[in-house]
Length: 577
Image (cartoon, rainbow, N blue to C red):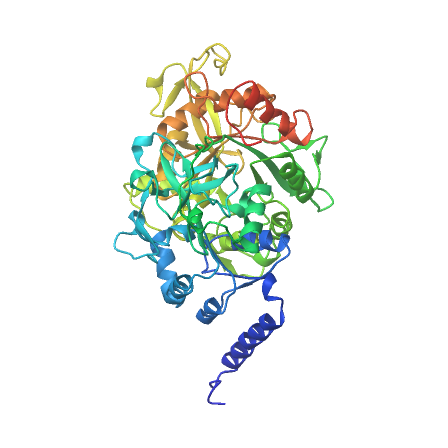
């Protein structure tokens, strides 16, 4: 009795841990993987990917689970400092260092790779695991590109033996703000592969059985699953051990970052209470008094994944705010989709604090936690971002750490927070008539002049799905949200929604020039040429980092593959194919 302690919970905890050890011993050790989950990020996607390859997965519950593992995956997300702090707080840091020192099979993903280095600019003075030399640094402003880097980018092997990296150097999914600089002279025995994003940097490292990769294999489609499969099977024997550290004799530079094509699914309940994918016309989702129904969300997301979508976005336009969090229909939907869609999933709608019908109150971070655990990679914040921006300006641009944007980005990293902006035009005869940031309109092929011939407009941020105007323009909103910790802008346009006349290029250019975040162009696509217009750099194009569409994909008016074919072959814009 004294061994277990006096509490029933302690006894039950010990017995559960014992059961895990026995179960693991009885299972096929060749088909078992241990995953280090320290409480931040979407580890479910990694679990789903590994299970799809026929392996069993358990998560670390106690420090000794690390030392008894046959294979260990560490999918780190969030910030370097908080990651190391949580590892030490849970007692994982030293067992992890010992496991790696013993040259046992290890795979570090994204931040899990960065922790293998001595430290990071993101948290000065915080020690990393120190397996590899150097300090991880932020992408410099001088590259002139959006940060975080969110794109499908080429992974080019630098060593003669490229295991587990694909020899062909395919594009994989990256989302990060910090990177490992190239070693002096361009080669190091541990620098396995590199990528380009305004500069060349190391994106994969290897020493013995320890592998670290900056990109996300679990979100890199078939290519990523194949890489995971090679790592799970173990390093093959080589005839020449020197090839493991020798530079390649014929190096092929990495493929350029690709522009992303995103399929968006607006999800809500229909008259029968079923979750369906719908589509609005200037945000009106009904036709003849009934909700437009384009199909079942999970099946449609799987279709888009198979057709080559680079990401899938679910926008929950019902929000189910009165329901108990655990019973939210979108959580089950996400779990199902994440089990068969191995590209990034974003979910928006209802990511805010609320009190359910039983009187239980949830914070916005607790809501986000539930969505990440269900399989989301990013969450999208809409109306609440306007309120957060308003408070930011009223406080004299002070960060309180209390807004949903700040709380979620602090735990999961800014790349996990997308701001969904729903603006509409407000025409003026002259910019001097308003204090808001204006754009010129009326150019050939651009946004039309106003009803009274006005040649200027500002973009009013709306709330509640476009039903309510605010007194904030898009420039004010995106600058505040970037300061608060957001990582990406989903830029809609109510005036263009469902019209098929093309994206609002003046709006895209204005937002791109106002912040350094990646911008997803949304609302208005009707043909492949519209995507090219949004993605081309200014002044001809909008300069967006990604193009999103919904209705034209749902109705099969323009196949997703046709968009990519046009961008690649006719517009000469790099895409993943």
